[in-house]
Length: 435
Image 1 (cartoon, rainbow, N blue to C red):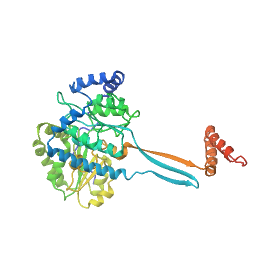
Image 2 (spheres, rainbow, N blue to C red):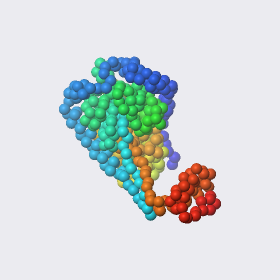
Image 3 (cartoon, helix red, strand yellow):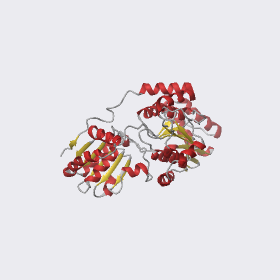
Image 4 (cartoon, rainbow, N blue to C red):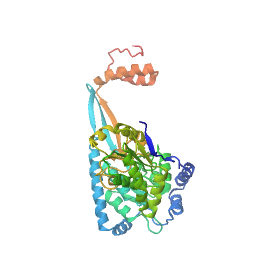
């Protein structure tokens, strides 16, 4: 049985790609040349904001005072979960050393980057959870300075809940600036900030393009496209829950793909019947996004069996992958390409997006085939070192000299030769390439 597309996407995440490269390149060049003043100019143009850029403690305190206590408790709950999971991840990477050959030691050392720049979207939606996910992981990693940057609203500034989240999670500075100008400010070290060593966090296509252009002079978490989600469901799945979960992810944006992969035609048809009414019941902006995403980007795929379903999922390499099927352990063992996996009806992508502790900054557009999402490890450099005694270096020096000469790299060979001559003046060595 070949796969049957009961619903086929008419567009892909790349269909709406606009020519933003030159615009972003120009803005970055302008800000690098013009510094703080030029960044402020762009903030006024795009954010329509003329207030203070680096928030003072008084401004932070005033914003925090506006956040309801119940929401503060929810943010603290999510922060604690993310923090504990990040600490668990950090514990998996440690300083180690071993004796490569007798007397010759090599090792690795884990060093956090000095300065992290965390971009927190704040335009259409106030991404409180993004502040938690990015700032907390940087703090646990041990970054010495963390800047949280979020688009301000005219005459308001950064959303108070974002300010609270960034503050309690450990941001050293909170920047009221969004878009390319915010990314540039963190990268170039404007407004008295240290230059960021790494930029993390989701953003729109302009933010993503700015990170792509700057990658190399600064590290980035990933180049992100529109968020995407796939659900694997069999005959045991609840069609209403499956449909609700698809719609919940489609509301991210008009170009956010959602996919249902199943081996049960009746389930697929029931889900497709339910989705339009669930979308219609959303608030206006959410409804508009979800409707367009479902109409243009969503797919419903009927497979022969669970092996074919798993293969189909791995080919898509979704950002978010949900399994609502029997034998969850089988799926956990079999599936290999996803940003984050949600096993069983009892959990959902929304949990991971907001509060469970795993990170929601994840690879999109098939990138999960080769990378994972944001974690404490992204802020940490794994470097290597070595040391040895003179006696222990003898065999290594001989091998290095001969390999280097075979490669035609005489300078490398002589770096070994000179040590053999100094440390073992009474010995003779055959260091020719054909020795």
